[in-house]
Image (cartoon, rainbow, N blue to C red):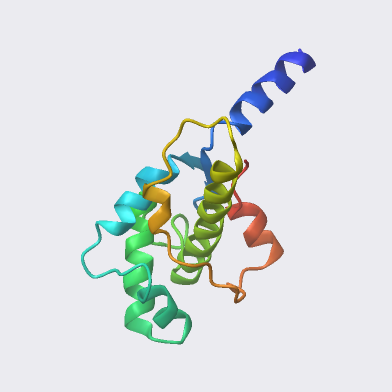
Length: 144
């Protein structure tokens, strides 16, 4: 039984599925589908909108949160479920860091046959702290 659990854990770890906290439960998503959905948001620019939101622009923060909710299929926070605007911004920061790490790992692997063309368009990482606490990071952090 323990052996089976280890085998499943190793197999699932190599699948590159993004795991995150939605405010109530742990969920999983295809990272590239999420990325495509983020890019499809009309008012949201991945390179500028989150930075404006972090600088204190409330309209940009709202646009960023709506894009994250759309991309991850999350409800608006209602006191019981969904993520707040700040939690959405934290989720986006952790997700983008995950994509950058994924991009580096795919490029280093000499045996991979996966294309990294869609990952090449990722914006540069923002080295500033996203403001998440260790608990938020643990909840939003994907399991690789």
